[in-house]
Length: 237
Image (cartoon, rainbow, N blue to C red; front, side, top):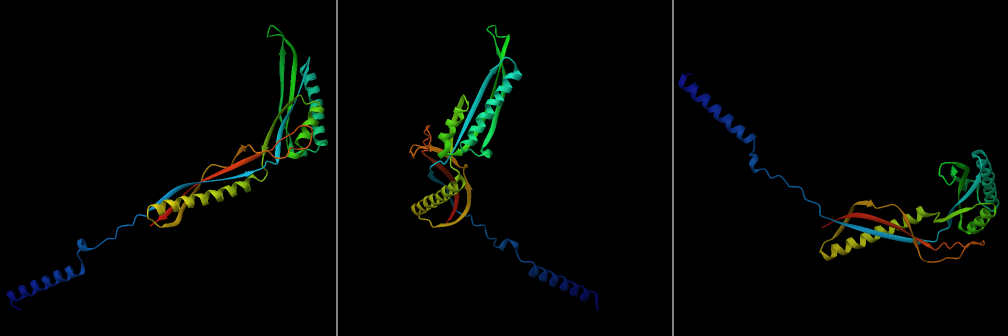
């Protein structure tokens, strides 16, 4: 093959290769990349509440004794505290519901503020009881020598179940609010995207009286309101 023919042949090969390369590699600038669609949402707070009559009462009973020595004060106090505990059990308090909450011993000083003239010992027990027995337990403790009484702290024994009921009402309240917002904005309410529980159950005293407990000390349980809150995010379209 002549030299000029060989050069023309090589040039044709190079042009063909370049054309093939252009076909194999499409123009990237003309490729469409879809953009992500932003999800539209509505965020609402829901509130729910239930009321319940407390059925448990907690009291603290204290015994305080005085003596010239620390040993004598503690011994006398231990005897008096044991009598109060025995009286509580005899009046119907369960042993598992009686708990020693504090034992203390302190000095008694004279007028000069420094001379020790004696000692004071004290013992406090906390008792949880069905509210129907509360009055009788107060009578029994004081009759046995308790010279300090505080309480009652009232509670609902099935509080967890009542709180779940309040949560259900809170979710329903959130859905109603979200539906109203979506409708007012001309949107369609979609699926729930997230739910966040608010604070825990917090019993709130409520001024409605119930029947008093038995015993000479009247205990009015009234009612308690248990609140729940949720934050719910809904999709809208």
